[in-house]
Amino acid sequence: MPRALITGITGQDGAYLAAFLLGKGYEVHGLLRRSASADLIGERLRWLGVLDQIEMHDGDLLDVGATLRIVAEVRPDEVYNLAAQSFVASSWQQPVLTGTVTGIGAVHMLEAVRIACPTARFYQASSSEMFGKIQEPVQTEKTPFYPRSPYGAAKLYAHWMTINYRESFGLHASAGILFNHESPLRGIEFVSRRITDGVARIKLGLASELALGNLDASRDWGHARDYVRAMWLMLQQSQPSEFVVATGRTTTIREFCSIAFGHAGLAWEEHVRSTPALMRPAEVDVLLGNAARARRELGWEPQIGLEEMAAEMVEADLARHRARLGSVTTRVELRGPAR
Ligand code: NDP
Ligand code: GDP
Image (cartoon, rainbow, N blue to C red):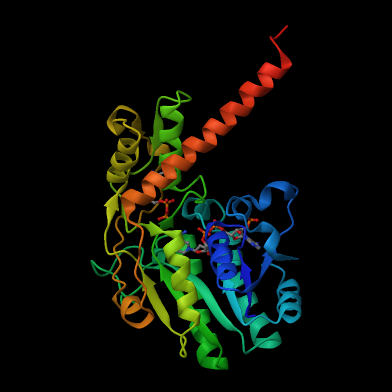
């Protein structure tokens, strides 16, 4: 039975990847950082129904001793380094933390693999944010990088260190340059979930408007379920490498609003307002990837389109809010009228 170790297993991609690998017969281990809210932390894995099938290891990416101990204990065949401070907007508020977790943290994992289990195959979660202020209208593996945020710069460092460990120590280390990917398990602070959650609240009468930032930015959005398959495919190749993973379609925030509100029968212009408070110090205006290499060499194709994904996200947010409303009503009913 192949054995995988995933950092960031409690995040969006970690949860989908864990479910995907379990479905392929893997033994799945995860690095879990200690939290005072331990009951909430496995929520995404619970949502996918896989939490109890994963062996968790207590550790933090910032603690190189812990990463070394865990890699030595697990002796994985494959390591997926997905843990990061992954929210671009926060990276200006916490640039040092972002550099440490998202950049140096990857090197902690590379060191742990190099020292304790050098035969393990390594995946680094690189990002289209490394292209930042784009140098070519369509980005490929050969497009020069120009990161526009502390997050993008930290990811670029981790990206080059992954390549460096491959070239210096012969590690089977690959990096997926993944463009934005979403799902019902996307963090609530990212724009897609902010929109679908806003649609659900407005539809259910819990809110009447949604404040967003720059509506003109444009992203190449795919579905996380499709993108974790690409991660796995990279580690099945005889030679490690870098791959762009993208859909080849770019959509503005405005258009995403139209699709998501439209799914619920709402007119987005009546509810969305743009506020300067949510603008960023430097913006990545547009991203558009060409995944021709991944299609050719990995046989990877995205299967879930944007409209289908937005509909799934809106439905999931409606269900979440309905469940919350239901439990509040039940509690009020049980308690009886307020005295
Ligand atoms: P999430 O933000 O959903 O998940 C991040 C994960 O990292 C969480 O499990 C989090 O744990 C963990 N983590 C954060 N800090 C630490 C730490 N110090 N020690 C251990 N674990 C830590 O991200 P996604 O799942 O969306 O993304 C996965 C990876 O892919 C990230 O590296 C992200 O930057 C990258 N990426 C994502 C893209 C996207 O569109 N989603 C695009 C390109 C790259 P906890 O639950 O405890 O907070
Ligand atoms: P990112 O591409 O990793 O930064 O993913 P996000 O989902 O956080 O942001 C995507 C784009 O949406 C960026 O260009 C943001 O400036 C833009 N955006 C507009 N309004 C918002 C908002 O309210 N929240 C977030 N997170 N992004 C927004």
